[in-house]
Amino acid sequence: MTGDVVIDLGERPRDPEPEPAGGRPRPPARWWRAALPLLLALGTLTAGAAPPAGPPTVSVPATDPADFLLLGDRLLVLQGLLPADGTARELVAYRLPDGEPLWRRALPDDDVPMGLTVHDDLLLVSTASSAGDDASTSAITLDAGELRWQRPGRALAVAGGGVLLETHRPGPGQTVRAVDPATGAPGWAVPVAAEGFAAYRYAGGGVDLVAAVSPAGRVELYDPRTGARLGAADLPRIGHAGHRYLELVGDVLLVGDGTGGIAGYDVPSLRRRWTLPPDPQTGWASPCGPAVCLHQPDAGVRVVDPETGRTRWADPRWSHLAPVGDRLLAESGRPDDREDRPLAVLDPATGRVLGELGRWQALWEWPAGQPRYGLRRLADGRMLLAELDLPAARTRVLTVLPGWARRCGAQSGTLVCQAPGNTLRIWRLR
Image (cartoon, helix red, strand yellow):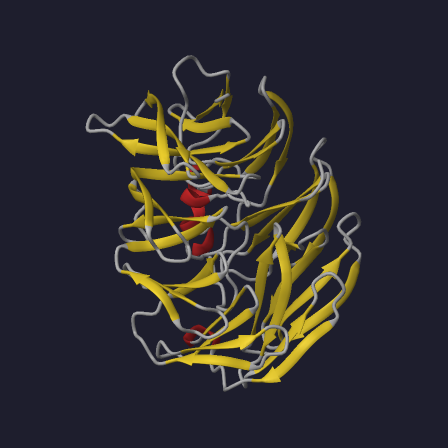
């Protein structure tokens, strides 16, 4: 296969993109535990989805819990996520649709899985110590499971091809280094000052801009393909990364002042465009088509113009907005609610509701980059499966599923769900 796929298990708001929002230092060991229900493909697999009526095409063994990734005719299963139960942590590959085992590779039980990155014929597996440091990436061939190379750092796919390795070291800080995906040979590197951090902009399935930020407010922008510096500026003091906000959204760099105030800077010139006054309800930002969405911690979204910072529209009902084609998919309820929630399709320019889809837990598919299916819990514990038609702003109910079909993932019409008895069941939806 060609191209890059990223499954990033770092802590971040729920979003369909394959990569995490940059700008805040990543917490240590809780990344993986927080991400178990959210393995997404985009790029991401999330919890939710399930099979149509009829027998499954195949079942494969997998410890419960397990995480899995669908890649064309390959199913990759990461199991043994709770080493305390005595199960070895390993990565197992199966061929689809028959479920034939292809290979298995043991992973260190003491390390915490951080993410999976696919580049051409290689699977890049990143792990770290339980304290969240000493990250390492192993390049494994997809066909045979053979180790091609191993290097320090967490792997990040680059849009259009290429791989970055992000390393953290006590004292000197962080380094972002390009490597040859085929051999692991090191290329250019960007050092990050102690107590500083690196932020990333994601587009086209990977990183397409790197920002190195110092505590004193020095921001430098780099092209992740060549390492060329694109711009630099001394912004108002950033302070300790854990108390500040910085994120790249489209062609604007958002910098928070720690009190809810946000300034927008042009990318790549880093000229300040606008500022917003302090607002304790400002949470996190995400792309909303041509605009920027500012999400509140509990619920409510404000959509601002990236050029001027002026509010285009706001709505207290929505806890999360995500662009899907020329529409926005809106979710209500608390952002950390993992159950099904009311979904609606909106006009990005005005926020007008174009259609209400009902209560669903959306399942995002890779490579389509949109939620193709939804699940709803019924009163008797079973799950209702529907196809989500966002352009038409409607749903089509497919079938009722067993109550255990709640941790699932789909890709290109293939659905995988964790089943009782340490089993994964696989269906062809079309």
